[in-house]
Amino acid sequence: MAAHTLRQPPLVGYVLAGLAVGAATGGLRGSELFAQVGVVLLLFTAGVEFSLSDLQRVRRLALYGTPLGMAGVTVLAVGFGTVTGWTLPEAVAVGAAISVASTAVLFKSLEDRHELGSAHGRLLVGVSLAQDLLAVLLIALLPALRPGQAFSAAAVRGLLQAAAVLAPLLWLARRLVPGLLARVARTRSMELFLVTAVALAIGTGALASGLGLSPALGAFLAGLVVSESEFAHEALARVLPLRDVFVALFFVSVGMLLRPDVLATQLPEVLGLAAVVVVGSTVVWTSVARAFGYPWRVAALFGLGLGQMGEFSYLIAGTARGLGIVDDAAYQSVLAASLLTILVNAVVFRGRPRWLDSWLRRERDTGEGERASPAPPELSGHAVICGFGRVGRELADALDAFGIRYAVVDLDPEALQAARARGAVGVFGDVGGSRALERAGVRHARIVVVAVPDAGAAARCVRAVRQSNPQVPVVARAHHATVRGLLLEAGASEVVQPEVEAALTMVRHSLDWLGVPHEAGRAYLKRARAHWPEALRSEGVPEGLEAREVVVRSPRLVGRSLREARLTERTGSVLAALRRADGRQVVNPGPHEVLRPGDRVVAMGTPSQLEALERVCGPGDERAEPDRV
Image 1 (cartoon, rainbow, N blue to C red):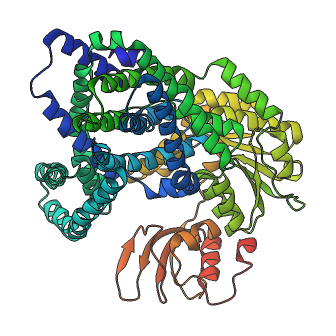
Image 2 (tube, rainbow, N blue to C red):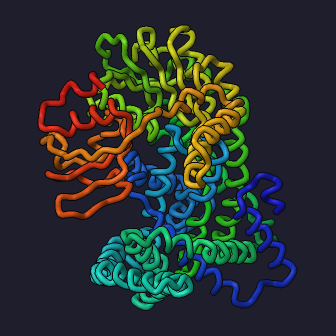
């Protein structure tokens, strides 16, 4: 509670609570066993939550930059260890521990600032996942650093042992686990489902430990196996509360291991190690991002986000101590330094002092760090999309369906590659910078859509657009009412708040299902939208709806999913069902359903919308269909 009141991550409170309990009681018997269970469950859920799609979005930096950055931080730790008198294996182990940032702290910081979808937020999410993956591998390789062992031979032997044990285990698990979970799910016993998931996590960890491997590695791989099952989300939902309890005990046990009397005698080492992380790690990761082509603003925020360490640092340091690689003094230094780095990171990254924001703003205004984009062709009468994340790509799908040209402005090279692959004009630069907007043709655009989730960047973008083109309509997104006012003041024509739109849509559907008269429901929604005038234009519902069954005959649609066909977007009709040629019927078909020859689409809409649907689904050439609709 105290940590929450002081706006600190919960793990800071847990560790300090453990420090207080340890000082008062001398340690609680059995706490390390609970901590080990917490570690296993933490790694199991990390495996279930592991997202290849998040890595794919920033694959170059995540796959190649992450090992480079971690190696750079380890080199700094080796240099620091040489000064403090550590042995080389000890310094390497400490370097491996401090090279991994806390994913929990990072996600919390990004969520607090609504920056998960920003350019630096996407990079931090992808790299943190890659760090977690490499941390599991480092734990498996730590035995190679034990005294008296040749590192290269021991590392190769460890990898071969892990492959020989885990490859058959993974092969067997991938064939047995999905069937087992399906059988358990059919019993409809949530208690049995929870017990099965926990047994998979702890059982695999114990099996890996019995075979001479790290239990964390076994639990992580068990989570990866479960993540491929359709029951992954349910398993995660059931295990998360249990995991949170045991992980809390893990951090409390870490706090109980901290010895204030030892720390008092090695305060210089603690402060020095914290400085290596806060300053050295920030410099290393900023340099890595710059080397991969990201501008100074994104690179600096990316480096600051990784200037801390957390849960995996404890795991690596604790494993190294158990193997006799690091002594108790070095272990104590890592634990204490991790707390300092988290506290400092909360001020520097989450709070972002004024001098930092002013420096970043000055860097942006001078145009430094913006890599030159190839000159785009002459643009006129097009749309400009600022930010090419999920919202921006959804809008691009609609523009593609209607044959409307558009330009994309983003700081993410991977996002620009995706935009250019669609045939769009991609401009590398800050959405709040006038240079990038000018290159995107904002002076001659018909509309500008600001799809970046970062409120500050969105406001700067709207102001820059207004300076270049005072007349162009600007549609922006906002997650909070305060941000909406900021964007309107900056000059936005319309501001869309996703939470409000989702809530009102759910209200409308709920009133329909409850039998509330249509006119009464529309009147209520109009009153509810009184404080949100920009959204009124989406309230109109066409009268005279009818249902119609349309046969899919177009060779352009056969073999494409509903998401790719975009029938609703192109015609305005709403798909209610999909009737297969073999007689099966899919009610409320999802976007993944693939159209086949002879399928019948049951749709609702106005007569003109349904006629447009018939033309699109017909055997004729519909290349000009979006323009006619």
